[in-house]
Length: 298
Ligand SMILES: O=C(O)C(=O)CO
Image (cartoon, rainbow, N blue to C red; front, side):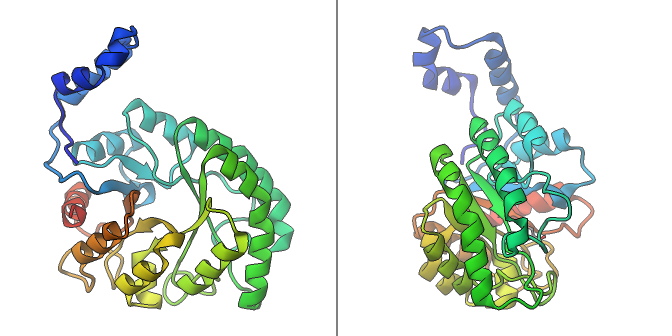
């Protein structure tokens, strides 16, 4: 994507709106800001995003500004307060979240019936807030098995998720369950295989329920990344990256060929974002992020 654009480009593209007197002072100010961005030359096919939690030492607004300069359009796994800051910089959150009900999170979520009332209330509140600022995707989790069979997990998740699907559909917001590895990072997590997630998508039966395919996590659990993406892409709404092993930079120091994987993803017709979720091991974290963006910019 061309990340530097001139004031003339902007004015040309906004000519109709300008004619309607739509261009207020704050817009004018933002266009000036855009003129002064450094930017890197990207190809325009891939929508680039990064996860906030991998850059926690960097103050949020500073991260947003610097990420925009290297071609990102989104800082994700962010919530409503951060969405306002993103909007101020004409950025978005490719996938959002919020403050989960007490005691809930990745290990304890939709596969437990006792959580459903609180989770339904949580998403009923968050979905319209996301829609209002143009955040089109919200993350969700299965929770850990805790002795539960995979069949029972499917039934329980289906029951809870179906309660929020009408709201998701009405607001055009996708709810995406993340596939995570249960071998290294998230022992006992239930949504740890693509097939299980695909069956859940069929059971929920709404095109607003999909999977977040985390390439790092699924390489650990299943391998066969490109074939799996080709087979199941209709159920996938978002992708995360990370070097295997170690979850660090996605460069030649690890085993996956990210350029080939991203090409395969976009060959499926995918129009969404690639969310960088590696933990930078090198001191210059933004240089690592810029390198990852270039690797994925097919
Ligand atoms: O916590 C993790 O490991 C995740 O991938 C969250 O997105």
